[in-house]
Length: 232
Image (cartoon, rainbow, N blue to C red; front, side, top):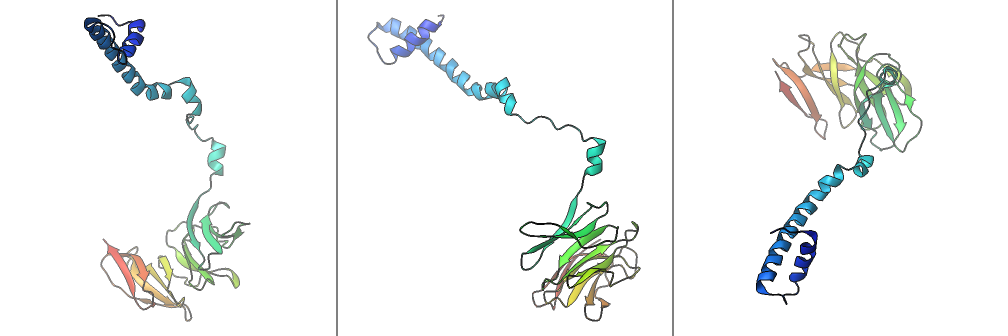
């Protein structure tokens, strides 16, 4: 049996009107059923057909072109960021000047202000809970042995208040803003131990002597305990 377009429409009609002879109705119903199955297959494939059509291609995302040398030279990045306890100020590190420096900007938007001028590689920001200070680290000439630097909003300019030959990383203010916990390598290069500094006296104490690195650290809310992780 050949199902042409006329039999398709006639067959659809037969599902509503069975006034024809049984043989004729059976043949035309079978013909219509084949056409209906073909229609269903077409409708299932229609989204794929449309996706491949020129009409859909108009809305498709064009492939990204490679960056030009000029665009690569103008790329800037933002690394660390921290928000003040009152939620009004964001400090962050960016290389917009060519070196990774500390900047601040109002949380609601505004003109950014450069806070550090070391011309080095700043990292590891932390805001003091009282909102008065920001601590970060920076190395010297790419030696990968950073020291701690403090920015006091009441005394503009950064200060290397913990000048040392040790590599000092991962600084965190205590909740009462009186202490800074950080990691350093006082005994063996790049074997990091937990250190704590009294901000009033600027004196540091070594709290661990582990055969493996101390990594992440977290103060307890009462500023009396520090939890750390270690890895070898």
